[in-house]
Image (cartoon, rainbow, N blue to C red; front, side):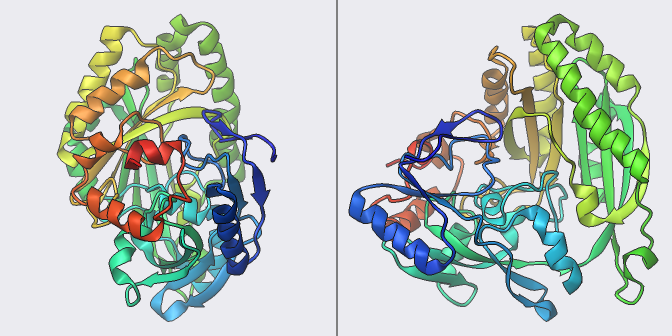
Length: 441
């Protein structure tokens, strides 16, 4: 029996019967055949950064850490094919020499490229979709042991399912990603009033390349972040194209000392004395500083998160964001919840992926967080009711309680996805309790 597994947030655990570290597609095929022969399920695992049990198994776990890096590149088409176990943090070193970058990113880069795309990880920016929308091809081992290629020209009808497949359709071996030419981001971070941000949210979201904001409950203020894209001149390089990065000391103070060391102390204290939370949050708000800098895209998008937390995130129709947030604020005040972590708000373009949270509609993302050691006081449960009532769709890799019956009403192509699953995994080799809940048997 393999060592007990837990995810990053310590919200889920499992104990696989065995763990395999494949180095090739052939070894993955062999592992799937072994699962069929022994009556086990089989699940790949990435960085374990999902807050749900989507990667949990008591069967055969495939650890893809030995299948990382670049398989091939087509710089003229701005495309790369990567091994499935490649982490997002490894991509700048792979893409940079090719003059390429991801079109968008979230604020965490610990995930593998397949873990991120299979769960619908996204950044912010109304002109851009989530990471899964950049998937233009993949090879995967299906539940029947077939090594299947899916692309715009081969089995193309499967691409809208495979690009964001929840790990339910097969074990991804490689993934082909549409990238863009390397670019800089001009980041402007500034405090603002919560009401002002809500009133202007739709306009600011539509006007900026990337707009997001954070609101600490119990305060009247918000912290906004607006990023503007700047092309890198290949002849001048990053430095000659206007890069103006944060200094080493400034970045350390903000991102390591304040966002990690100090935050860890503060939320730990608030856990012991919850009544102090509103006062501490208001004090934190008063010292929120403005920042203005220009740097490579990945250095602006990504923030190191060392303080563990739990997270639930719902995608709602973009226009519903201000109303939903006002309802969350009223809920926190009415129920006297003491919430030490901020609520994060982002956006994404509509897309056509079968199970994308932005399927068919421009979407606003509202994420609520709790320190991982905080007791369950009902905050997530009641916040979820607010967000679900606004036609919300839960992020597949973050905490939620919806079932297949609930989700089938929120996704127009839900049954189409399940039909693809029946085709690629008829015997449910990639099944687990989480997939049973959200997809059905």
